Image (cartoon, rainbow, N blue to C red):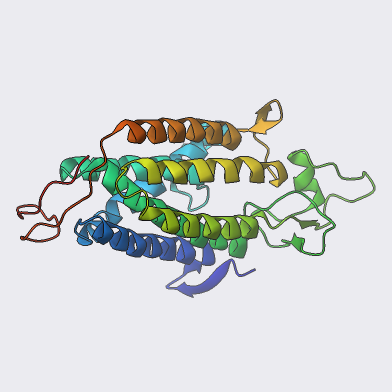
Amino acid sequence: MFPVLFEIGGVEITSFGVMMFLSFLAGAWVLSKQLDKRALDPEYAWDSLIWIALGGIVGAKLYYNFLHFDALTADPVGELTSRAGLVWYGGLIGGVLAYGLYVHRRRLPALQMFDATAPALALAYAVGRMGCFLVGDDYGLPTDQPWGVAFPNGAPPSTAGYLRTVGADIPASVPDNAVLAVHPTQLYEVGLALVMFWILLRLSRPLLERPGRLFGVFLGLYGVERFLIEFVRAKGDRFLFGLSTSQFMSVLLLVIAAILWARAGRATPAAPQRGAGGKGREGSTTAPVAR
């Protein structure tokens, strides 16, 4: 693990922070390619990046504080200003809302714009989860499999004491300070996210004339992946039928995915067209793309 890469002027540059930065760049690059495929200006990807980044970070932080409301009320300033405590689902919600606001303000075709984000989100997620692995966060339950990984300097360390607090079944003979090997769920998710990325790239052209479906496929794939991975995650937020809050969010994503797929299926297919005046920038003569 490499939680801290180096320091600049007393400020620690963490591996998680670097990978999060790279995830935004990777996502924006893929988004630009997908926009070009849809006859939309690739520059929209870079123009919207600051919106997505700010919305994602704020959403991730607020979602974390919602899940840890007791800590927030005890030390609101410290919790809100801490660099720690970012939840992917909150980042997804915040980033999608911010991106949607950007799309609305620029009067862009919403379904095509969101379809273009599908492969980008999958790749960004893979890169971001590698940051979680490097910093030792979001790991799984104890395992005796040969690929198990111990996180002695994790956030928090994978000690028997901590794992007991999230419901892990550990023999009483194991002391609380013992560091245990756990499922490297971050790497599981990196691999699954790359599979999603490949699937979404393969589907991006066949679904080009059904706006909304590709984004629906992403939500469905991610919902299934996250629902399953949660069974081996070290989580303390299981509150109903042994399911975590993320699993209930996953079910909600699957419902939204089904709605998007059905609504896109009823729409009249329409292929985007390039106009003579450019790739869809404001003020150009590009023909409108079907919403």
